[in-house]
Length: 428
Image (cartoon, rainbow, N blue to C red):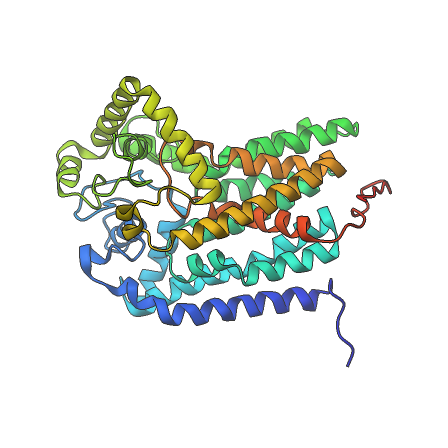
């Protein structure tokens, strides 16, 4: 029997299968953590799990914490509804539900091998594509967060990778059906994790600019995508307005997120004990004021603190930026007791960042049009987190682009793939 070529469909499928089996194996060791009944099974999807429980029990989309507090807009709807569907068939906070949700996240992570392969192949060729896909299959963060983290992060990673791949094709096609699909998929991604809006308009704008430079029609295509996005997300906006009698776009928790990272506590990247899920005082305040009143109070407190401690805020924003790129926050004993794996994470994240930036620099030097969309994702995606607060999983949705660029930086020089119109460029 002959071995299939590296770029054959069989190779892609084999990569996904190996990736999935590896994640399933890790799930078998980690799933019991989600069955801990402490704080009402909080380890099982946190707010998303509580909203799903409310849906299954017939109380509607609400109650994101520990009691029936009424409707919520704390999270967008896609992932809580996904969990609710699993709860409906397999039971609320059961072993079967934990295994199904972790298996779904593992599947989302394994399928991400495919857009990684096709993105890298279109930009940098077959060799980079194959190595990048296999790197993702064994990528430690991809394995851990898919096998032990019930949260929208892994699904967002898959959706953002698919959207990035679509953008690469949109840059040379004004076909309305393709732009329609981009708008609809953007809506799904936005209602899964709104942070994707930090890059999607810029990526879409880049694709429009590429069409403009090629004298192709771009405005009708962009309009179709925008209308599709608006049509997809408008039911959520309408629901929020009817429920809360005020405009709420994707979620209402910006004030809380701002307060968590800007309250004077700096020994940790996310101040423990000041969130309603971890503080009795904050939880009682949430119940007393109601969700919208509580969020408004936290935003006011955070804004007052920032205005009176502007130097502190600038310094903390810089620290959050450093943490995003290197995973370094502190080597203090108190901090390391809370985050014992940080020494490894600092080394691994920093090394990956250095290689990815080297790959981005190499791409910029060889062909500007290839590098720009990567730069958009890497530099604009984390901006919101710089001013609010960080979590260790916030970088995960753009990990595929770090992997692709790092692999490209380490791959021997050759030729960039042929572009539309037969234009080819060496990168020697």
